[in-house]
Length: 175
Image 1 (cartoon, rainbow, N blue to C red):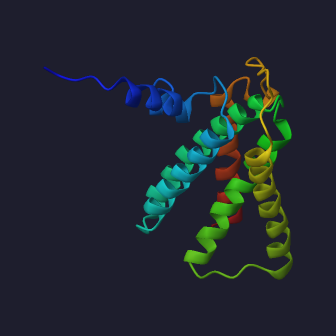
Image 2: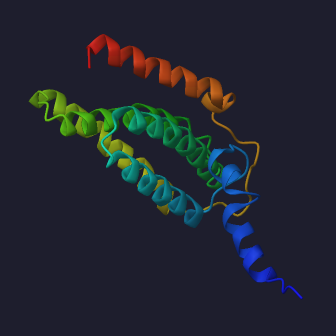
């Protein structure tokens, strides 16, 4: 006779929703602070494990997956605090590739100009402020599940446009 532990399944459903795939890659629903923090931690741990392998294209592919999942997490968290999140999405979309670029430059021991480093540092600072704001802002009592940033009305299209811009800049700069 097999025992059924419904408490554990209920806990997993509270954390993951239907499945980890819908938790990370769906733009529907909301994230409370704990879910948002958990998503950030697991995504960053996953990325750092892959990046430590030192395989550039694997790191790049993993970075794209993390970017998409992070867009979904930010949109869900913004819905929880009753914000469209457009400014958060723009800052994240600008800072994430810069963060990857800085990581790449550091791994390759390449030097960045002093002024460029200052500007990039400001953008990364904004990136961290967005995360901190979304992490510590309490959720609204009544969630608006229809609230969406205009940028993410078509999230896959927005993702592809961001990737195209990044690759264009990457190849234009010659890195």
